[in-house]
Length: 338
Image 1 (tube, rainbow, N blue to C red):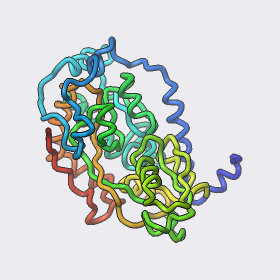
Image 2: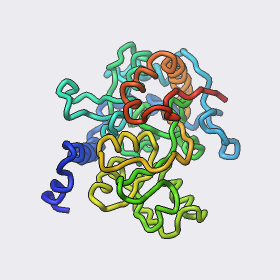
Image 3: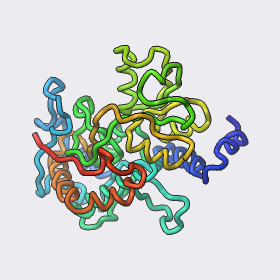
Image 4: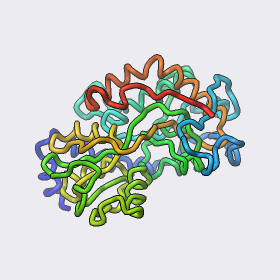
């Protein structure tokens, strides 16, 4: 794809496609930056070894969103290590190219280089409670496929990046109680003839992100025979926004992703739209290192307060305009703990 052809393909939709490509490139560069703000020692981001009874075995995991630890406001070794850093900031893995979730608005001169969006508001609430300063955060932009490795390696304290709580992921990282409810949905050009996650996908090229629940669902349905046999599951891309760019360039015919993310992508490009209803129920949680029980409990306590005071204001600002009325996501999920 030549630069001239790419510019021509993106012409006419207000520079959003260009922003998408620029942000995707920035993500790759961000991963190459040195980890200068990493805490000292192996226990600085969640302690050593595996969790002590914090995660359910796969056979016990029927409702993964209800398996987090009960809230607590107490500090512990993980939180103490964060507070005792020379650079006293929370290190959080986020997205920087998901419209209204975690992104930089190139059309808002007041925004500057600051990240903003629904997930970013959650991060600021956590930082304010733990460190007393909502802005005491070092954001690290990470691709969808690198969320779990970033936590396990200690590159971040936590990930707040539209990350669905699943049984498989609970074997690799710890999760907070859910802070958002959504489900998988199809995004496609308005005049494509695609009607949803159904037989209209036959013969179509479908894009999803590596390490996403969308890709897992597509491959599982292909194996089970519930996805049209002629549907072409394209090789997964590092970031969800890459799928929108591929869709705009005509390299794929449809995208499968979380409905909340798909709605924001549709708001970026009026030539695409959501097709059909959500066909799964999923919950986003804050992901942390296994064994960091004090941090998990503290985040759960912060989220309990945030659901009562802050969540709705953030939703109304960032997501209500794109998700519309009567969305299944319009209220915070009820938290249950194991």
